[in-house]
Length: 147
Image (tube, rainbow, N blue to C red; front, side, top):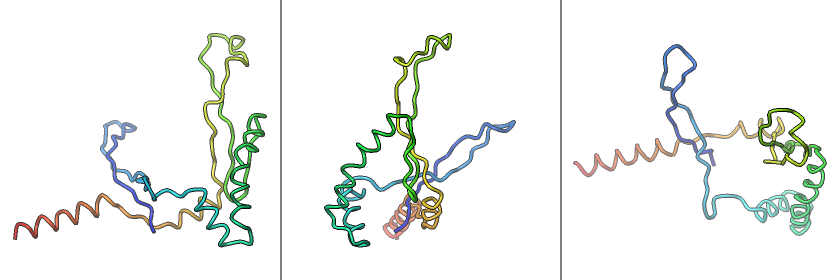
């Protein structure tokens, strides 16, 4: 299977003149049956290891709480081969540093930086422009109906 993408027009304003450029953007498969569930991941891991599916699901169910425990301490959590999770904090803007106290700071998200080996593995993927293929097949259909 391949990674689906679409082409989007963007205006590049970095030069003296605005220039229209086209870029590839993700078109992830979503919806019922397209994303991979924890159950499916557990089954795949079970098939590739000596672990039982229940063991894998147990780890999956414990992992969020254990990670949250360490992230709440301001620590990073690194899973070798997968990547590093870390909390990102923010606050409202204040006129002086003294006004930005601990009770006015919050975690706005958990960030993820993937491991280099994961990126390297994924970069071996094939790509498929779904929009271009659909447009081309629609042109062929319209030509056949005109004949």
